[in-house]
Length: 460
Image (tube, rainbow, N blue to C red):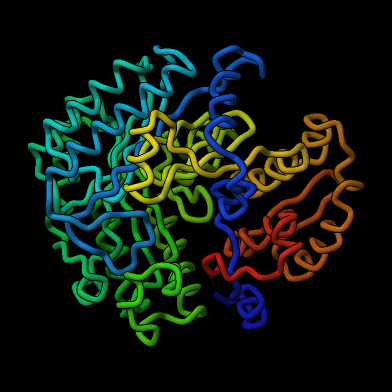
């Protein structure tokens, strides 16, 4: 904390993108639709844009039985389990339309089921879904196949089913172990329940177990979150995702049930982050960057050491670059140099599929400038550094000339101790990692042109 001045905190107590993509999803346009997406799929199949990138698949399962007040995900709160069967039929329709454009048997090296709550689906429905996917894709041996798990919805028998179906990575949503915080966010789950599930996961042979935590929640204090971190260190998951709570009640209605006066201040949040970094690194975790930690032998830590990290719509990834097919309501994918997003409501999603259309309603075809800036921003977000020569050779540009304005802005950040500008490149400092989103924003043409950042969560 001594490295971070009140002036620096005040300057960066502002909204900014998380850069799970660049350009960010708020820049998607309605003019990009199904035909644009189909063209991108067909170009991948034909090899018109060169050797196909590795293929990843994300499936959004929107259903939850209970509302968590902090959640900003696209979800449907329901106790009606029969809705899952109907949804699976529509996922099947969406898969068939993909197959028409790109053929069957594409090699799949990554799969992630997110939500909502993927474990809302019954064991038989999960079996149906995986059988459906195997009809359309060729699962690569040794690939990463992960699923998000609400600890309140599973037991050891359910975990055994997930292992049987080929999932080798689990992500448990914990957020905080403190009972007062859990009550304030409407998510009660005893710590011993999580410990038993993680122990069972190891017995069942899952290769990696992730735990999600959130700092900045209502009623959290440094002391209470220290206790949660102590328990996490005892739990010792392979990976930890540590997110800052983004309080945007004007955008996300459930957050209106959280009282703003119960939230930690920006200064207190930075304190929690600082103490978390220290505690987790002292416990042997590698700081991957921004919001991810991993044990040294985990694939994510290995990828960081080898310079193979990438950041996509699920956060940090071990695949340096990949095409991402996204299925389900509101899902966002990447194909070639395009981004696409499905309809956000179940009604529109189903209606488009009933008409025989892929449910893509918005997206973006990236320009050359977008692609260059994406490479710069991802280098900063993933490696904390960039070399001018590598960018120059990849894009046939002169970095310092093209980014003359940005270099001037960086000089101010260097004065504040966030970056070091060298003759050959740029390095984010240890202090700068607290504000790496702010460093990346320097190269975001859209943010620099539009100073109204209120659509984003705060950097701190």
